[in-house]
Amino acid sequence: MKFSVITPTRNALDKLKRCVGSVRGQTGVEVEHIVQDACSTDGTSEWLTGQTGLLARSEADGGMYDAINRGWNRSSGDILSWLNSDEQYLPGTLEKVAQAFERNPDVDFIYGDALVIDASGNLLAARREIRLSRTYIANSFLNAFSCTTFFRRRLFDDGLLPLDIRYRYAADMDLVLRLLESGIRHRKIDEYLSVFTMDGTNLSCHPMMLAETDDIQQRYGAFRSPLLRKVVTTGRYVERLFTGSYRTVDVSYAFAQDERPNYRTISGSRIPGSYRTR
Image 1 (cartoon, helix red, strand yellow):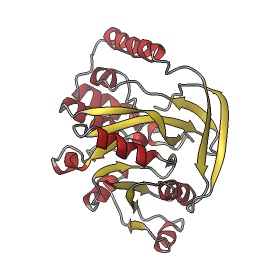
Image 2 (cartoon, rainbow, N blue to C red):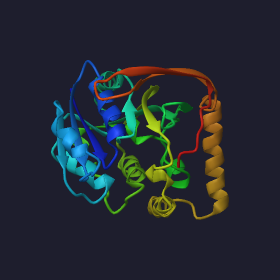
Image 3 (cartoon, one colour):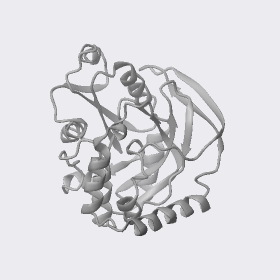
Image 4 (cartoon, rainbow, N blue to C red):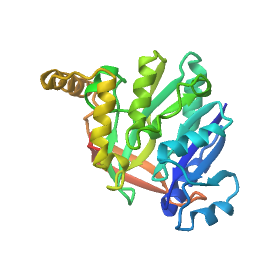
């Protein structure tokens, strides 16, 4: 089973090196790592030229989601994913995902849990997600981090997977709602698969994020009544509460410090299960 991991990037060389290191650190699977650089001016293009084992291209694009689509268009893997330059796969993630797909041949979409960190790698939250629900997402927010999502290639070949580039900030929400609406079978891995960096520069922090999110939610049947939406939000909170998603935990993880990779173990005590990222 071969993975194609797409990393869109622009002027984020230091972060990109750590991202690349986290992919290089994966074992037990075949991986092609495709980096789509949007004509960075910070030395990214020159650095990519000197790297082995990367399929890199520097070219203008129409934004992050267009860059991901471009990468998928020239990929050859059985399993497709994307990993932003400020994110990392934890050691062993791709092997766990491969095993999950092999055990579930009827499943086309897998997701898992994520660690939320700051720019220095310090733990902010240990996000343990609940089931994906179209009703929850259409009336609240997307509760699956893109860095923990993986798709069978047949979704792309069937035209279900390309990200809608009309959206510049919330196309991941549109994609997941589209897959759920289509009845695509999905499964969750109850393990931390990735780290998500929250440093204030995320697309989810952009002022246009709310407008795009509202447009997508209305397209997928969000309730117009604030009271009904509050009921859904409360139901989601109760489900997370009863599944232990808010419970504090002690966490230790391996943070890739460079492209080789050299890892640094980072630990935290009583890490909360919730942190607002969207």
